[in-house]
Image 1 (cartoon, rainbow, N blue to C red):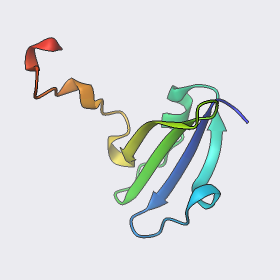
Image 2 (cartoon, helix red, strand yellow):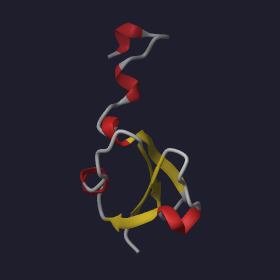
Image 3 (cartoon, rainbow, N blue to C red):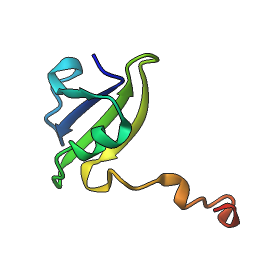
Image 4 (cartoon, one colour):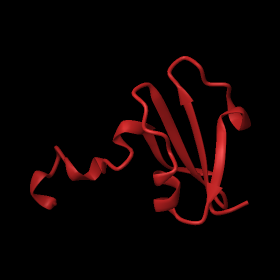
Length: 77
């Protein structure tokens, strides 16, 4: 098993756990590139060693960085 685990599912069709598992990848970039961009598809990328979610959201916005729009401190970017 590689460092990043990718799980994807369509809205209302999550199978749960390993039923949504796609593949594992060495880098976060590889993981993001291998997520199919579909309108109703969601994803989660999990760090295998800590089992913490590294990134999640709609597949169409997989490259969006939520820190880019910091409403509490807009000048920090």
